Length: 62
Image (cartoon, rainbow, N blue to C red):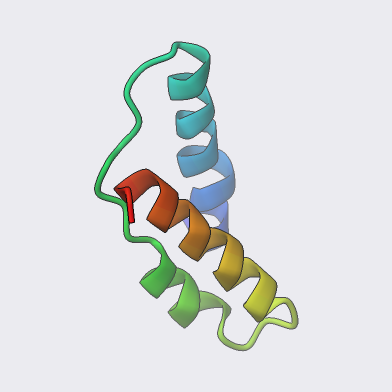
C-alpha cells in the first residue's frame, strides 16, 4: 500500500472503529514524519502535514 492508501483504508477506519466502540485510542502515534517524507512534493503539503501533526499531538497527549 502507498502511504495515502494506508491512511485512507487502514488508519482512519481503525480510528473510526475505536471511536464508535468508545474504545481507548492509541497514545503513541507518530505518523507526521512519514507524512512529511511522503507528501513533501505534494501541492497541499502544508495542510496535510498540519492536520497529521495535530492528530499525532492529540493522540499522543502533546
